[in-house]
Length: 90
Picture 1: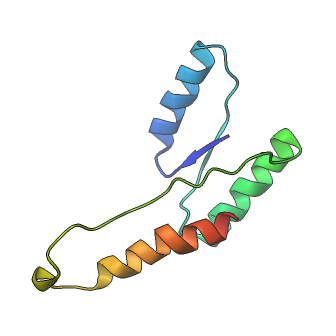
Picture 2 (picture 1 turned 45 degrees about the vertical axis):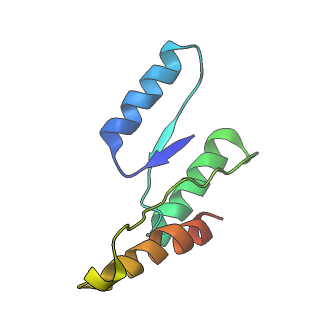
Picture 3 (picture 1 turned 90 degrees about the vertical axis):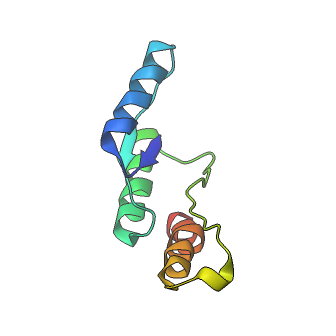
């Protein structure tokens, strides 16, 4: 089961998996949205009956000199994805 925000890219990866002899499904999911995460987990369980392993790989970062910071919203985004995104899926 693959999950990401970009459905087009998900379809490409699923096709590549299938071309190489693997099974794959996908679910569009934004980890910052609780309902998306709930839908992902429910879809996975309805498709495979259980979840063996959950790999949490979503993440954003910011590289800059702190003195140049103009807007602290980047830290909200980082927490939404890097922390709450993992909590939402788990």
